[in-house]
Image 1 (spheres, one colour):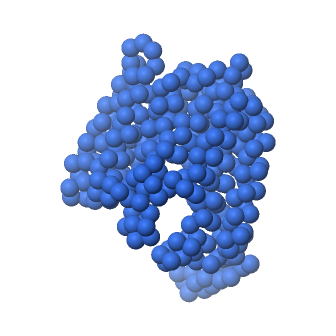
Image 2 (cartoon, rainbow, N blue to C red):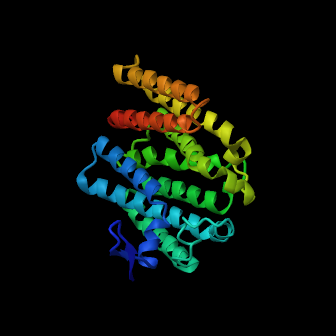
Image 3 (cartoon, one colour):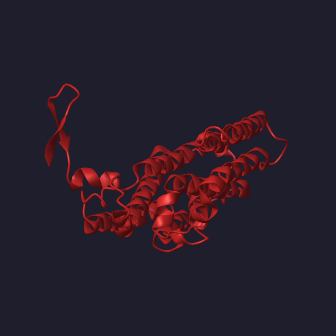
Length: 289
């Protein structure tokens, strides 16, 4: 459906509305794109063929879409009660049954796409997707809210590695770094919504820590991931690892110091540390198996 909205010059510009436009916004497009891009980049770095990279990308995309839509559909009543008009379901732009239907459809597509990459690899990836659904349906409001993120992110290097010829198991440090990145992603994702979540009765780990302590804790798992990626592979640390470790530590300390005057500084620093971790993980892409 097409409607119009005012332009800066006063004229009306067309704007697409309705479920077809709102549904993509309800899948949490930022995390969906980021995680899919990370998995695809890992597959490329590991030396997979173009076709195999496409299978991996399609499987992760379907899984992330299913988790994102499940989240908005399950939280629809809570989001509506909290007046979260930025959520398409809560704003009435798309119905809950439509979003549930999209989530289940994406999940059903995820199964054959994952298994096409390899039976064992597919089973590992589906375990990560199941962790995401478990977070939405049960663990989000518990002390263990961090666990599905840790499992889901750790499953990505395992999924990519087990789809390679010979089905090699990924190095321990890749799994540990992935899990730590997942914990950091959970803290970062929950941080902006902590006050509203507390009002709605959601008491996951970030909500129990509170905004200030979550902001200060956020860089810790990311710095730990940097250390694991820098020091975990066998042999003496190389220049890339030492540079990443020094950069991540300096960024985290700067963010913590500026946090006394600028509330958003620790979060911004954590995002930069996460970017360093992802870059280092991709550099290690040919060695994590």
